[in-house]
View 1 (cartoon, helix red, strand yellow):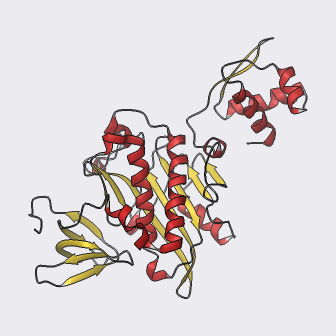
View 2 (cartoon, rainbow, N blue to C red):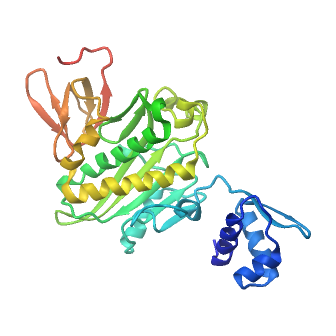
View 3 (cartoon, helix red, strand yellow):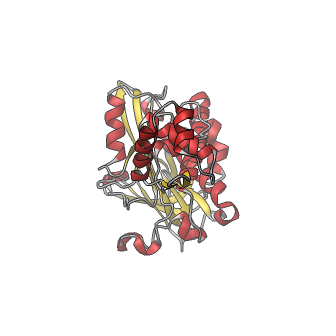
Length: 336
């Protein structure tokens, strides 16, 4: 959005519901009436509904359901996260774009948001379902002071932020919310969010990380591909009401900044109470399919300081798993 269009939009917002004449806008902004008309036309092309009756002035009726940077940053209460936002109607992968920006020197907190992804990526090489203009797909550049061994805890930190944002949005309707190690947020046992992290390191230190977050906000259950329908949901499908995507994104950025600041100060240990509040796998029998293709079964015994899942086998052996696909054995008894 051009600076001129932004200033016109801000002026129309200040008198929401009322008309503002082209002459008033011209005088207020120090531009010609022809330039006012040009900027109003540009805003309309971006999806803003602006009435303009001859002699009656311009009136802002509504903003588009788009995650534009100007919409998200308006009132955003962060210090560093989301202060620069790159918005795309469509891209292959927000993580790919953010990784390119990180390598070019983008500041920490730079966020990439897309209305749709053609090649969205999930963990373990899976594709990520990314229908247009219904959900949130964002990737954020981080520059943590962290060694590679502790980097997985950033995934857990992001899970806390997503869970707390969902809880704040849904209130009592989120009573069945939980974090599933390492990167899923569930509602009533169904996936509503996934998180992907990619690193660039120098030696054993992280030079930058890209945190990709996808949250199913308004997609209908019947819109999911067949293979996802029994495993995924959205906030709208769960609550029965439309979610304000801009408000949700802004709040997620604020909570995520708070969580990451805490992580930077004291690591995962200082976040553990917030994580444990939503981690309901403890004591449950699970199966973990490892990257190697092997599966191990046991009781979830917690999460280690480095973010690894602790798995207690029937033999008494305790394993630390850093990656894998977890399945909760619903019919198996939990450990007393």
